[in-house]
Image 1: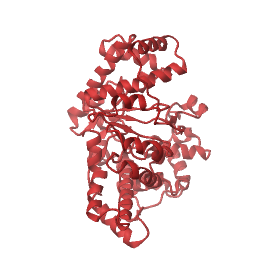
Image 2: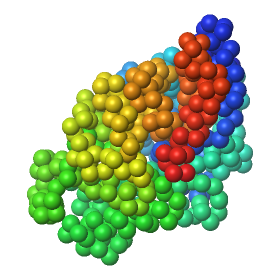
Image 3: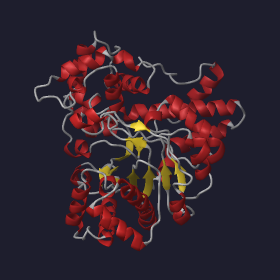
Image 4: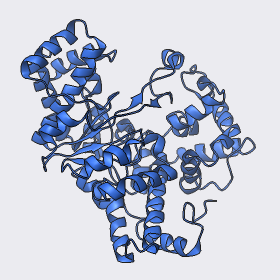
Length: 460
């Protein structure tokens, strides 16, 4: 059973105030502005198949931990044969569940099992079959279909992440059949990165979708603007960009045209990097024009495990953080758009060393910049605390944007938001007792961190 005071401080006075703060926000609606859930779930509303494919296979936190301990991904159903038995994969997961002790994954999974499925046993090799059967039985009921769970979770807004060339057919179905605010997010990486294996295919698809000549830079930019307009028509309020580095550039039209011509013929790594850098500044200008909030999260070495990538493809838990530099890298973009009050660029990082040194000072100065929450590897109680400790002194609280769950694991969304709310309550209670805030201020700030800042930043 989950302890009601989990993640709160051990001393009774601070814990009591944290508990009171938490009670004021625990039932607020969830705003999930950045995630990777599948819109097909809500468009089709089909029952989830089984506990393994729902809770284990899509969660890269689980996959990477088990793989690090020698568990083959195929034995968990990833890339497995059609006759694979999900019960066997679930038993293997349960057998190794102790590996997640004290990790965020355990916090989230325990919340899912207890709060969503009503299971009071601890997951283990002995309880694996009974828990599997209990979950499977619930998944067969209408109450556990995607739309019913969406309403049960009190989700007010859920943003998916979609390629620039996605036809958004599922989003169109959702708008007709399930009138909730489930919106797309424009993610153009594969259409911008000449090193992406499908870059040329995405250019051809952009041309087909927009009737633009994407073999010229002007036609390519027109096509991207047209796709952004299409995304907006289905409710999009944001774009999302994930690059290897934070480099930006502001090339002349002539320079950009020559660069684009080289990319179409024989792209070098240097040209691909320069084009990504230039396009970030171009996208900032587009956001100023169309009002889409821009999200940027550089610094992940994608698919680091070459063998795993060649066998099973992307997003299998082998992405590794790298060191980042922001101050010089962002300057071309900020020189052009950093002072624009009607443009919002939300910065994320996997390099925590940049929080106090670069990101907080930048966001604490430029009107266009906001700091995204502790993200990915740092989406943890300790990571959230470090984020507040290193950024608040320079950027304050109001140059941040609340919390986003950034997950493919739909059922973990309430758990992740619950952890974030508890940690904010813990921090605020401590500050009140240190006389840095009054209680009245703490309760007001908590509403902002939980609900109001995210709506403002993402124009919701």
